[in-house]
Image (cartoon, rainbow, N blue to C red; front, side, top):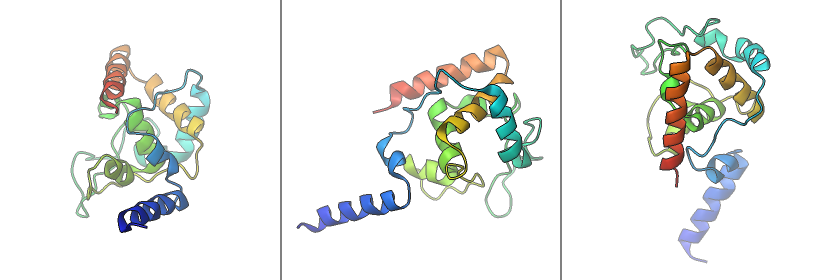
Length: 159
C-alpha cells in the first residue's frame, strides 16, 4: 500500500479515535440553528456552563479586547457590545462545541491561541443550540437580522 494512503488512513483513524469525526464530516459553515430550540433551557445551561467566563448578564470579562500576557484574550461579551452577533451559526456552534483553537485549526488558521474550551463532551448539540438561541434572544431585532445575514453568507461560502 502506498505511504500516502497509509498516512491518510492513520489521520482518519486518529481523528475518529479523538471524537472529531463530525468535525471532519461537516465542512465549516454548514450548520444552522434547528427550527425547534428551547430558549429557557438555553438560559439555564448558559448560567451553568458559560456565565462564569462570559458573565451572568452576557457582559464578558473586563478588558476583553486586550490580549493577556499568555496571548489569550479574555472572554468577550455576548451582548450588543461584543462581536458574537457578527458571526454565523456555523462558526458559533463549532466554537462552542469544539473550542476556539480546534475551530480555527479546522478552518486552516493554525497557531491561534484561544481560551474558549470545547463543550462537546459536556453538552449535546441540541443543548448548544439552545444556549445560542438564548444568547440571540437577548439581542435587538437589528442584531438578529445582521447575524442571520452572516449565517446566510456562511452557507453560500461553504463547499
